[in-house]
Amino acid sequence: MFAKVKPNTQIIGQNIIYFNRVESTNQFALELIRQNLADNGTVLVAEFQTKGRGQLNKSWISEPFENLMFSIILKHVTFQPTDPFIINKTLTLAMYNFLKRKLPEQQVYIKWPNDILVNNKKICGILVENNFSGSTLNYSVLGIGLNVNQHFEHIQHLNATSLTQYFGGELDREALLTEILETIESTFDQLSEDGPTFIENSFNAALYGYKVNAIFEIDDALVMASVSGCDKEGRLILDIEGIEKHFLHGTIKQFIAQ
Ligand code: BTN
Figure 1 (spheres, protein in one colour):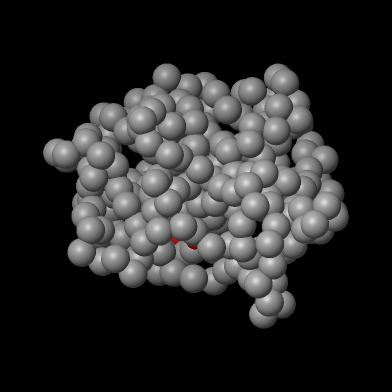
Figure 2: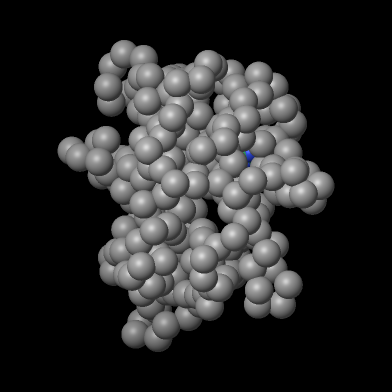
């Protein structure tokens, strides 16, 4: 499986390592980098992870042989980011663009900081692990979990969905991965060529709740606010009665309409 993944790219996915079973593709990627064994753009794909990692120390669980779980090693970024969260934004925007292209009739949003929702259910999770020395970015591991052929209709509490729910039959995961890697590389090319502002504006405009008044939970209180964007450090900017405030991931709760 995955032998047919030959993306039309310069860097991302020119080398692919496939695992039937691994603790975590992000973890394995970090170890390869530490041992100086990783080429820039290497992709690690797994059918099953025994310790799949998610945001905020949560785990990522996915049925084997049904979805896509992979990590990309970025070793030499051609620019030094002034924005520590720009790698995150660029990758998330790439996945958003890919899903919007696949599902043009559906509501696709980025749920800050990194989830992608389709019709208010999570389809994709992203975990970027950056290594900085001061403000110099040494390397990044970009971890992506995309629900493809798994059915979630019977596990309502997860509030998850997958591509098959919209296409009916089974989707070809090799073809999808090829297209995703091409989309990711072209979005990073856009970052190098056009600079961060275009990426930041596109990311903000795709955020769930952008410029829409809704209820948030902040310090155990319910507050009416709207999303104005995401700052350079990755904090959510909320407009609360005309005043902008910045919040770290995990400190507030944004409700998803069901
Ligand atoms: C989240 O939604 O909390 C982020 C989930 C990220 C999961 C992917 S699956 C491939 C890669 N390896 C990991 O251990 N995690 C990421």
